[in-house]
Length: 268
Image (cartoon, rainbow, N blue to C red; front, side, top):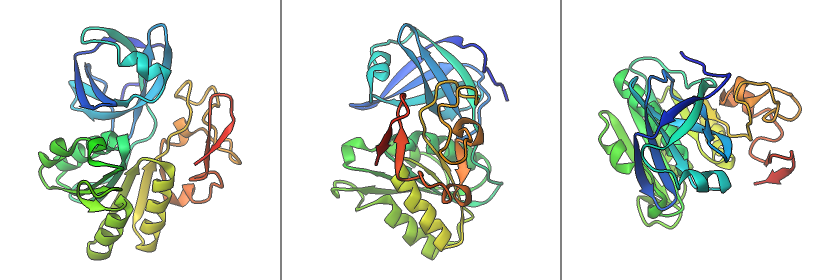
């Protein structure tokens, strides 16, 4: 796998897919050679550099699915096809599974993007996939049509308001699936409070659980220490971002708070 960790490579935006009012997918033609669960650092010229998870990589092009959540992404959304950004990576550890296994993927919000990458690779590896997505309302759901186009992938949907799929949380669907099926691995990506519940449910049914953890990052490869976990000092960008529930459940901060650029705690 490539690891462009020293300086960014300038890449032109090949295509921009509008997923919903607040989310775009940016397509780049480049052999990134990433694995599901990894991320890149994107430099937005004149603005900032931010980490983004990879939502697809077929060896010829890769996708970054981005939600507009702050000043940097506000500027990114102003860019057009043909404009250039800087890319470093791929970084981090990936989700681990073997051919033919039965997987349950749990995604909340824009965590659907990285899980879509997992589902594509799992499909190629002959796995059966239960793809569980959740959002507050149907207008915020992502990739539903893309997921329905995948072979041996069953889509399960939940919305808080019941506007699509099951009314409630995606973790409720997960528990129902684990109670009825022999699942080998549970993978999760989304808000930490959701991930914590996914871990608890997986442990209840004695199923391996891996999840991507989002922390404030500046470098992507363990130099700046910005994403260090309290009490351990281990950097999420190196330890993860995909980590096992057996490790995460021991962290006092997991599912409780995150730190901003100044190191201030923000409780969920």
